Length: 116
Image (spheres, rainbow, N blue to C red):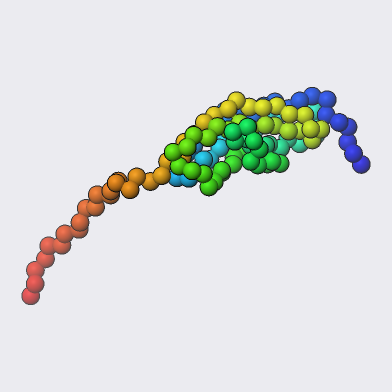
């Protein structure tokens, strides 16, 4: 049985954040809501205006592999079961590789004792 078609659009995903890593960007957002009782909301993630993930139920997405030192712009769209949509605000992130010149300082362990 097919339920009634949605009459109201969902709210847009809110507070989208993009956290850049080495060759990847992790997106997190606050769920949209729908005034139509029983409507299910899924999400579509867009990068550079093109969809990269559709039908997501979760409010997080890992986009990889990406090219380091390249800026990527994202937005997320709420989609309800009737096909009505609402777009969130865009955010940008630039993945960065690990600096090969970075180094870790180690503290050597010294033992003091006597030899018999």
